[in-house]
Length: 132
Image (tube, rainbow, N blue to C red):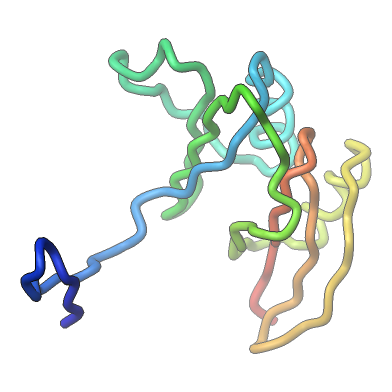
């Protein structure tokens, strides 16, 4: 059990799971995002709730992953902070990324995983890793 201090009182808190990860994209970037996240990574676009659709962006899912892409007016790509996605078919994803012209940086294996980093169409860094 973890505790947080709220209004001077110690309150019990328990984190249950990670629901989603959000990555920023520039205004008007939804089609390029779909091209990369669906076309290259193979994720499935899921509809945003109607109450949030007017904000722009798009949502994707694959396996237990929920990935939200949100529009940020003063967009700057995340070059260091990044989600790490556990995948099957790392070599196929590498080939698809290269064919799409994505910037890719191989990285050292560790903890029983092979991995590489790939930049989306906006320069956001993602790590793709596959258990050896």
